Amino acid sequence: MSQNFQEKLSPKRVLITGGAGFLGSHLCRRILDGGDEVICVDNFSTGRRRHITPLMDNPRFELVRHDVSFPLYLEVDEIFNMACPASPIHYQNDPVQTIKTTVNGAMNILGLAKRTNSKVLQASTSEIYGDPLVHPQPEEYRGNVNPIGLRGCYDEGKRCAETLFFDYHRQHQVRIKIARIFNTYGPHMHPDDGRVVSNFIVQALKGEEITIYGDGGQTRCFCFVTDLVDGLCRLMDTGDDVTGPINLGNPVEISMTQLAETILELTGSRSKLTYLSLPPDDPTQRRPVIARANEVLGWQPKVDLENGLKETIAYFDSLL
Ligand code: NAD
Ligand code: UDP
Image (tube, rainbow, N blue to C red):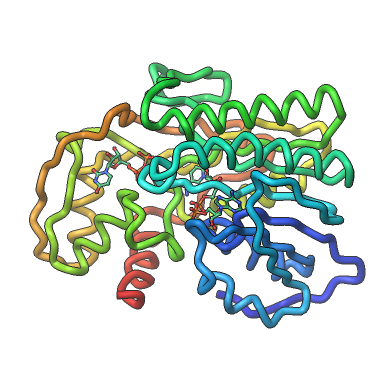
């Protein structure tokens, strides 16, 4: 990754909540590389200090340990609200805290944006579509979420956060941007967070059985992290009339069995596939319609699955 820190005459002060996490840490790097200042706020529940250690020497980087479900007072120009565990294992580990993070966190961050008149971008999710009955999913689709299921704390929390963003926009003219992020992968994923890409790669590298849940026919689309971060930055840079929601994801759809086979091939692993029961409310299919991102942001993913997986495999190989 580039160490080329630009200097800017009047840098923006950019708050990144969840900045020590997988996506947040890539975003911190990207914003610093563009010459702006970063305040990274994180409670380190799923984030890791090692993700941001290389940034600590940069005088334009500041770290604040804080839980966004409590108010915070800072002076900033832009906010990326990334704080929230994204892996089902992590967000289901303490579901009440997940709701506090998504809902109270959104209110605190929107209050901060209102006071400072800063632009604020919400990291929303394809999970707001639940187990979708419309395929692929355009932004107009309102979703099929089980409010009392195990994924509800995350899905409904993120849905409520979108509502709060639009209410603060309509009632208080807060300058909002909502990105609906689909499955993203790459370096800085947690090796043990239970998400499919990290699970399969770690299992393949260790020669352990590859755990496919259900019959492996369920589908997802995987976006490489650099593409996703590029989409988030483009969305932040749009004018105040662009609020979103805008889907960001790679529209190439693949089944979990195909994903396992691809990872086995790329790692050269001899691991065997094993089939386990499907977790409740696991969406059977998911694919973003990205026409809006294409039209409004001029954005589309550039990194194909094979190249993205190779980079991710190299990262996990170095970790293990
Ligand atoms: P992650 O778990 O790696 O990072 C989340 C970060 O937020 C961590 O550093 C964690 O310590 C921090 N955090 C959690 N609760 C907090 C709190 N109450 N106060 C302060 N910090 C807190 O997850 P990620 O994959 O980087 O996801 C980042 C954001 O993107 C999340 O909001 C997630 O919902 C969203 N998203 C991610 C994906 C994906 O595929 N990675 C898909 C859709 C949406
Ligand atoms: N999955 C799997 N084996 C694993 C981990 C996940 O087959 O070891 C499946 C999971 O059931 C789901 C898909 O992979 O159908 C994506 O899971 P992930 O947790 O990565 O993301 P999400 O379900 O939130 O899209």
